[in-house]
Length: 448
Ligand SMILES: Cc1cc2nc3c(=O)[nH]c(=O)nc-3n(C[C@H](O)[C@H](O)[C@H](O)COP(=O)(O)OP(=O)(O)OC[C@H]3O[C@@H](n4cnc5c(N)ncnc54)[C@H](O)[C@@H]3O)c2cc1C
Image (cartoon, rainbow, N blue to C red):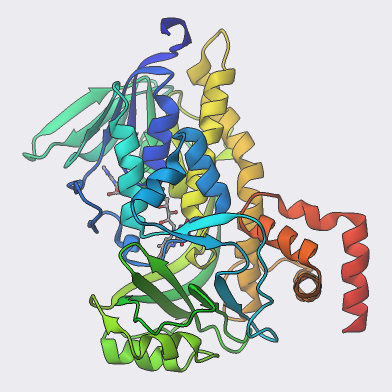
């Protein structure tokens, strides 16, 4: 065991999905792993201040589910035991989009789980807590990443403990999984290094969410519903999924000011104005279990750490600190878990020399392939004219290709499965460049 260790202590900032999965990846390669979290961590699944997004629907893609099982074998059973609702992909969630109300429902051959974000996080936390060499320290608010006097290497972090006293902790590796990544940026600034360039796509998304008891007479032909608006004129949409405890969580929202209000009446009237009545009809007769929660998401942001020439040894930003995706596509947790699997592979691969020095550059290079597909989905937001940012030059063709591909997927179960695999980040978007597929899509475009 000792020969496989590459460092004495790794410190992870943040016990969200990226931090917890990273801790799982680090535990075999460091003597000690310490996760510092500013919040009190509830012993039961519960909302907490540091992750306000947890009050909204959190879909776990199949890639994320598999990545979590790779890091924590048997994790799917953990979810099932926690009451997660199994969903047959392609069949149990009614997809409503322009021209398809609903999109053909077919069993695509896999099960995903619908469950609240606090329950997913609690299940991952239990696995991390179960590692003998891993400690979760709650109510520890990291203030600063510490570096050597020449700024070449990170040496630890300074944090305020639960009594408000300032403490430092040494680390061979600091993983910044704090979501915003501001600590990494502050360190780069303090040592006089350039900040990573950013690509952002301004979407001004406004979300509102409410939880309902599933009524006895709930529709039998679906367990969840996803309703898209009529782009580019109507950005309103909704996603309602079942949760543990016989509940529905309904998230509705729109863009650029067309957003729901925070009261129950406003929630219902916004739901009534969605393009189809399915969600409204279901919830208007259901008992509301909680207040309406709201969330504003101004922009998707990708930080190009891979373009930096030098980066301090022993520091690694991960998860949302690298890339924040439009939450509508349900990608963030899955990308975080996939990044943790990449981190684990890189740590396993590291041979002689200084494995920690090479870690961040290798990670930044390899994570690009992982981010490319979810980011290419975020780019589709340019369908709405008010979206801010660099609209790709050939965007009209991309849109027409997408519409024709959707028509093909509606007709052909194999293409339906392929598109679902890409949406679930099981396959890269580059599979759409397959010449035989391109030929079929072009034929559909010509028909249109
Ligand atoms: C409205 C909304 C809906 C979403 N829906 C989905 C979805 O359906 N599916 C999906 O996969 N993803 C979804 N996401 C994205 C998902 O929540 C994140 O991408 C995912 O949780 C990974 O984030 P993270 O761990 O990097 O950061 P976070 O989840 O934000 O966790 C950061 C953690 O760091 C802690 N922290 C921050 N600063 C400090 C500090 N200085 N010291 C100590 N601790 C600190 C915080 O308290 C928190 O626990 C959604 C996001 C939003 C905003």
